[in-house]
Image (cartoon, rainbow over all chains, first blue to last red; front, side, top):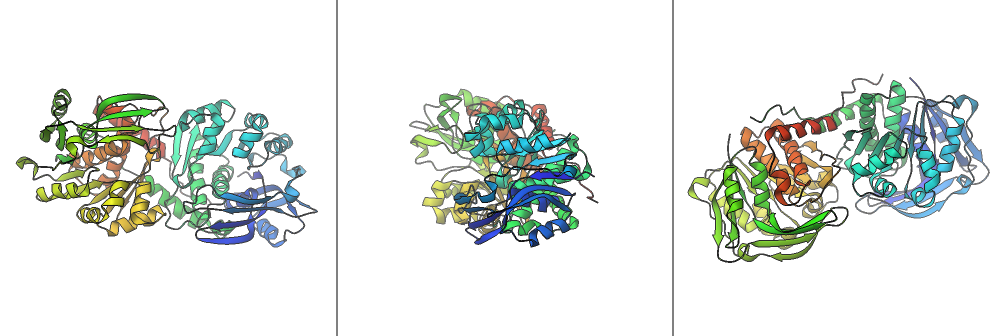
Length: 307
Length: 307
């Protein structure tokens, strides 16, 4: 079993969906990731919060096996994001972003993080993603998330970052944008030529397509009756996948497929509640129970013959 | 082995996509369906064409085992549709629709069609779908396709038709519209209460979700590098599914799942070429080969334990 290192944001989110709202709730990519990955292995967290951030959630993380030595506490306020989702729970409108202490954040890895084998570079400035990689000695598997904001504004730095990682986790629309190709299969191939041999294309409520070299795998999302808040779905997908890989300490083809399924499972828990509530109180039995439901969702007995 | 009866349109389509265009090419829901279903079983075709429709495609259908006794040839011109797809190959813009002989079409089933067991009511006026059902003695399995046009304009008649069928095949957006519910799982449940125990929700390039009572099954679409023309994808999905069910003469849960996979397989061939070209020159080996690729696409070895 290996640990997994994550760098990203820890934030206060104010989120409104047609099904409810929360104000200044716990959020941020690294917090979603740490919480969801903690069921599979230990997590080394790299992030920054302001003086206004309470101790209780940090203590909660520690109890889950999350090492918070890399979580800086700086003078000023914690990163805040405010967004609103429409009826289709698709891309939210960002109503307000206050970078606060995140504005001049530079990740510093504690000495004992530097031999990390599994690394998730959550969606932050690609220059910061590179800063983290340069502090890790010899990682076995590095995954990177990004978004249209960096594709638009920091493409060269992003391409530098991409050339150093094993997997890109990205939304479908952003994959098309990054590759400048409407066809998702061709877009994945173009991105693979930029560096990552693996490309996980997130399709929201449809699941994720995993391109591993020239092999394709589809990890469906479970069709849920009640989806309350999609915030964090991508980060918990990555958490299920990287947490699983690190927990098994394996990146063979079968593990990658199983990891993608585990990612879909964790994302399905995430969207069933606001903030990190959906992934906070799980246990392994509940998680494997949902893996079974995923398996039944796509299981058809082989069609051997049509004659 | 049972035959499958289809009622729908036979048309000339003029289609433009970013990848090419065709003018007055063979099209229409019943033609797509008949061609694609013919690999699995015999097809009884009910439709109408004008005097301008050539004999050659009708002879081709006969050679495939399609009975064209129910294909009326009327004075006037054949139904024509002209559409244009954008870069995302999503919903096309309809540029022109000429109903022509389809305008006063009333399906008349030849005597030897009336003991049909498997019936596909393609996307036509729900009153015509009911006319067909009233001419079939005791069908075993009836599936119906529809669209926003009938949901908007003929909801009462459509609901009457729905109360008489076993399965609705419908686009995701139209399922939401019909059920007035943004959540696709809840929408499927609402539609099931209208009559059909089975609801197959087509999600375009993402595949189809099959709701069978309270069981869910996801038949993915195969991610293709080259998609040229999505016209007919829904009809060939239905053809793969109903053709398979009729060919096996089985509607048990396993057959329904396998049928949905076969639907996805036939749709994947359809969209790789214009008009019916993608489903015209297949054979069972080619089809089962793609079934294997679908199976590998979603196959993950069971995750037995996380301890």
